[in-house]
Every structure is written in C-alpha cells, then in structure tokens.
Length: 332
Image 1 (cartoon, rainbow, N blue to C red):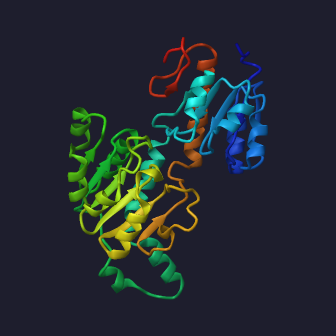
Image 2: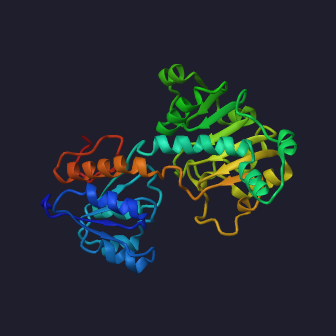
Image 3: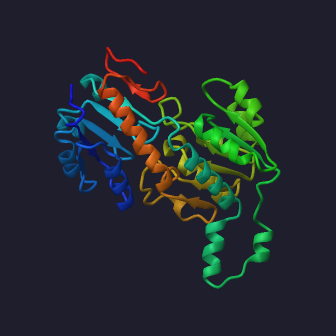
C-alpha cells in the first residue's frame, strides 16, 4: 500500500498557467507531482515514470505510456469520457480507472447553448464581415433564426443533457430526447421533456444536440443516412465526441443547404486540420473546449484528488465514477 504522504502523481496534458497553479494548490501536502514537458511521447513517458497515480484530461493513455509507468495503480480521468485510455492493458495490469461523472456538466451545457445561439445567428460570419467593414443587418434579417419556437432534440440525457434542459427552460421551446439506456419518467416530468425514438427525433427536431459518450455502439451514430433523414434546415450541435458524426456527410449537407448550420466542439481528428467544417460559413467551431473553464476546474481537481485518496485508502469509489476496479475492490 502506498503511503498517503509519499504519493507520486503524473499529468500528461499541457495546461494554462492558472490551471498549473490550481493543481499545485489542491494537491495534498507531501504529494510529489510531475507534468509532461510537452505533448511528445518521450516527455509523457518521462512524466509517468515512478508515478503511482495518473491524472489525465485529454491526452491519450497509450500502451507505451502504461509500459513506462511500472508503479501505476490508479488513473483518474478529469472528465467523463475514457475512450482515449487503453482499457485492456489497464485491466490486464490491475490499474484502476475512474472518471468524473457529470464533472463538466454545467460548462458543457453552457457552451452547447452558446453554440446553438451562435449557429442560428451565423455569429462567426457576421463578426468577420462586420470587422471587414460590411454592414449586414438586412442580410441577417433574411437568413438568421431565433431559438424561440423550436423543437430541440437531445441525443443523450445524462448529467449534461439535464443541465442543458435546465438552461433551456427559460426559452419558449419544445424539448425532446433520445437516450439508448432507458427512458426517464421522473426526469421527463421535471424538465418537461418527452422521449422519441432516434430517427423520429432527427426527422422532426429543428436543433439536434449530441450528449453521448464514444463507445462501440455509438461510434458513427449520426451517419450519412441519418444526416440525410434530418429535418430540412436543421442545426446539429456536437459538444460530445467527434466519432459520433460522419463529418464529411455533415459538411456536404451544409454545403447543399439541407442543414442550416452546425456547432462543432469535438472532431474525429483533433486538431481537425484539413476538415471542410473549418472553412464553411455555416459552422461555428471551437477546440473541444466545452468543459474548459477555470471556474469549474477547482471542483474537478478536488474531486479527482478525493477519488484517489479514497481508492488508495481502500475506501472504494463513487459508483458513477468507477470505470474499472481490480478484483477485490468495490465502489463506495
């Protein structure tokens, strides 16, 4: 058992100076830490050598990294999705994995609403043209749209979907959802939302917003065929994972005018160099930053440390956060 006063934690991601400071303030007294000096594999391997714990935000945790981390016992994802972690190797090695279920729900929901409004108003285009000296008030009047009166379909109704539904409650809109798990009768009453099968949601929603993890069963869910069946003039928002969407089909639908706009925070390839979605006037794009606020990070790092302390002390993990626990350990 690792002594609580002699814990070595590694970080693979590169952070803003404010976030480095927040991490150092939050770590328990006596804990050692190592930050990767760059995103290069050699620097990441050097950071994990000797680590008992690995805290990771967006960086992939590959077999090469795990091979170098001979003392590693616990990986804490500083978010919800674990699709970039080599789960098979962790299970073989008995390395526990935790996530932060709902840890970024509020900032992601706020960012999703931001992209909805920006996409409906073609905000990047209007901003760029105004700075260039154009005055497009009447052109905007003939093209732009408002949120009021729209049917909004949430694909995935977990913590983020519920946080978004709460934000949308102040708008005069209709909310529908699809979730591949189970229908949620109590939540339906609370958020004035009703369930629709996925294809019916896509065919009737004015705005479709994605809030699912990337899993084998969700990969490519918004396929070329499903994009073709979306309501004409609809808007697609993706603040979840890029692998959910056929991006070429989405770009084609925007160019052809079958879809009005898209707000994209997550891409299949990141950064999405060469993607057609980056050059279209119908898109609003951001660098997978929906959950990234300095306000929320304090709660993220404190909760991550609490999970690590509980696990190392034999106290288990909150059930919603436990992704993989070696045999003999149980959720709290």
